[in-house]
Image 1 (spheres, rainbow, N blue to C red):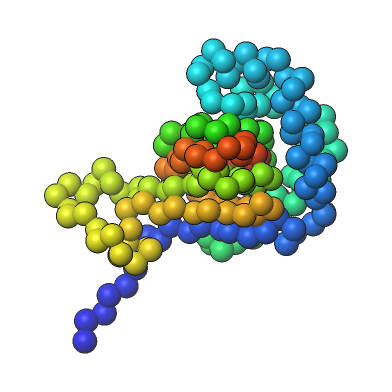
Image 2: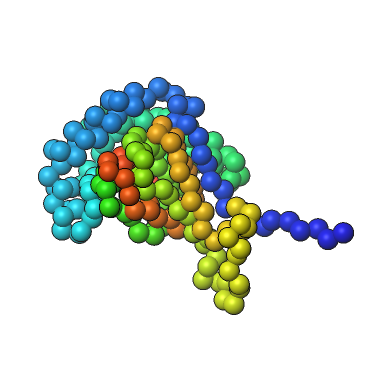
Length: 207
């Protein structure tokens, strides 16, 4: 009997943010994101100059946890989720920790999308979701081995999830997704009539 095993797996962490405290008031976090976006003229200008759909604080605000207590609480919760994921990945961190590198707000309007990308210089990346109206863009992950597949035939449409070339995830409001930062992903087009709101972040290997 042949023995077929899976090698070099790609792990994806999916949980409810509330599984690790402190408790986050989702309404307060939602309101804070929109208040920040309204006041962040530098961020608005960057989005307009770069043709970025909607709003992101990525290029303008680097100290959200210092400015807003609700973001400090959020990071405290994220730290625990990331530590659990790192344990599952069996990283040898040499008595160092994974620490927050960046955290930013994303507001994706109807028709908006984020093209496929990775997060260089980071270890773990992720997103927690505050508003996912009907039709809001799902998250699609890409098999990182595509460049090495050469003459490989395409997968069947009904292939097992772990064998598919692209895998789409549709989280719920209040969820958190984590993945290793080298994993290419994209936010599919928001085909709904309302904005999609999320907070994304990167973690690096601490000193």
